[in-house]
View 1 (tube, helix red, strand yellow):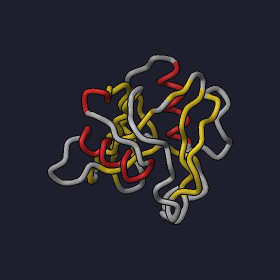
View 2 (tube, rainbow, N blue to C red; view 1 turned 45 degrees about the vertical axis):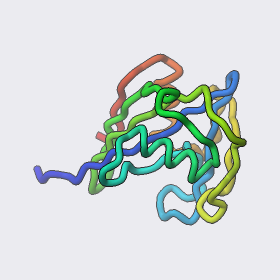
View 3 (cartoon, one colour; view 1 turned 90 degrees about the vertical axis):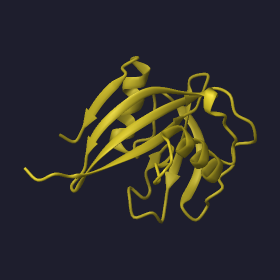
Length: 143
């Protein structure tokens, strides 16, 4: 078995009552036309919380403090040529107004009923949300 390249990715789980915030991917060459979360890769020299704070600002225009982020779920996901360690952060406190800051890569950000996600939600995102609702802390996808 050959060794896959591994990446760390971060996701922002923002919940309002019984709804979760999702973003519609476009022009990214990955799952375009599907709903995901505010997310991104951890860059060189960056911690996972630093990456989540950066991505929240870049994608949704909100400011988050590290002490307001809580890691609530981890997914080990295999893709065709890589392994992703996905860290999902809960954030109940942020400042600024949720705004689509990357309209060239995002078709919009919206809240959806957590128990009735859009049919075009990325499958591993749907699984993560379902697991989080069930208070699971870890999941695997694609194996």
